Length: 105
Length: 105
Length: 105
Length: 105
Image (cartoon, rainbow over all chains, first blue to last red; front, side, top):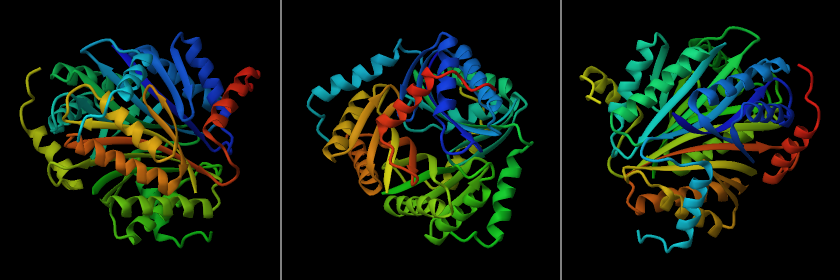
């Protein structure tokens, strides 16, 4: 099953600067061969369910290994069985609708 | 690795009433032997990482099988390596603090 | 507009124990006259939109005032215009469905 | 108080295609003068707390007006008092760290 994930990993107990941990997780995700897109409040990840969640688990293990005693992560995840839809398709679909007149309320 | 999860599964394209799908997922989680606590905006789940995410995958498969073409799920997940902390411990810890005077700002 | 919120406030840069901050926010929410229910990964809050979000803002101000340089908060929020549905109604509705036989896939 | 938000609005009960609703919300946010960046699982929004949440409320009102009986929205929101940090700063900060050698675990 293919999944599109929005991933936001927050190490707790390591001070206020988190970008080094996020960068390390980016490397885990791309080393796992997953398609990713970093944004200002997380990373979008696309791939097979088991591979995506194995990589997220590796991120948690790595961030604990880097010294974080505690982690809280927020994930949004989407699956669909009606059709294939990749990361860029979702953005493209919204942008196309933005060019059309709004449906009247 | 033990994980505490807050899980909120939202089937899309099946109308406005979602409780039947949520009830079906509750059964998947408890059949998997996981500890769960239903609340008004999701379900808290406690267990080993791989078992928890295998059960969440089963929920997605079941909900698609029940007719939902699309699902969007929101997950919060916490891990910690400094000490054991179960579901009830977190609530108890907050309740204890609520009885103490507030730290001065 | 009435709203049901699941609120999870995470102070960053104040160490690993967060329950004191959560307890302080519980007080802000109940002082605002909002209906709340604490669970293991957040707090459910029910009320009018503007009152709920004014109280959440007060929580952020208080937690910063208590010394947290940075906060990341996760919110799920639901509104509906088809009918009234309170916090307990959602849980009751799922529990009722759990007693019924599952719809066949 | 300045806030950085990741916003994901999900109309329920309007079928499987949601991009028209998301596009309408994008317009609400930009009409409100807020800085936004659309990604594959939501929209990042930057602005003053009250303006951002007033715009999110308008999005809910609009989406209900477009026919959605029910909406579930997921928000991540960050505030910080130690320093100014805009949307692009967060991404830049991670990218810089990705060029550095990883801290040894």
